Length: 81
Ligand SMILES: [Zn+2]
Ligand SMILES: [Zn+2]
Image 1: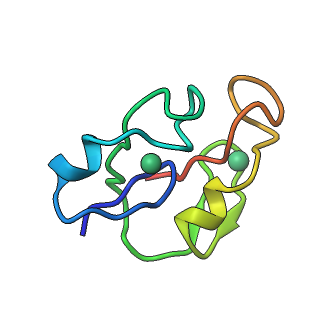
Image 2 (image 1 turned 90 degrees about the horizontal axis):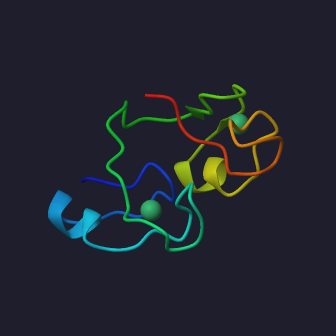
């Protein structure tokens, strides 16, 4: 089942997933659509910026990343593929 790499929300199809705004989009709240997570579907998930790992996408992206490209704690962790 496809799910978003920013917030972990699941959808029945990729079209349904990417049709809706994402509450954890890197540009800000609802500033863009959900984006398909294309990596391994089994956890744990690691942040591509800092290496922090979490059991679920929701747990990973729910926290600020101290190595975010926009600046320390200026965005959420983002899962590596
Ligand atoms: Zn999302
Ligand atoms: Zn991080």
